[in-house]
Length: 149
Image (cartoon, rainbow, N blue to C red; front, side):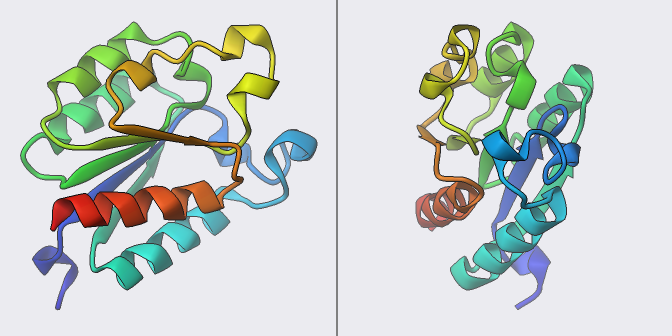
């Protein structure tokens, strides 16, 4: 089976996640974005789905990816990072998407600064996973794979 024969899960990582492993390791741990990608690809292979893994600091680019996923991706895993509590535009793009969405956060938002508690993305998400470290990505891919069958 080739990747083109498998349902695709779009994995979107928001701003500053390219700095994982060096940025605030006491909050986010020592795993890098490359570690997250490797975990996602391994989990995707185990679950029979292809992974389209992306990261951007640009709100507009993320919105474009979400809109392009309509009709092509079986599900979206999104870690909106700094856009979680600020981007109504990403929320609006997610509301246009026609499949399941799982919001993932490495750290527990409810234990962080109060301004981080609000998530606009949650209003469009099918589910939310937070505070499990990077293994939350594997949980999300497993669930999205189940929903794509």
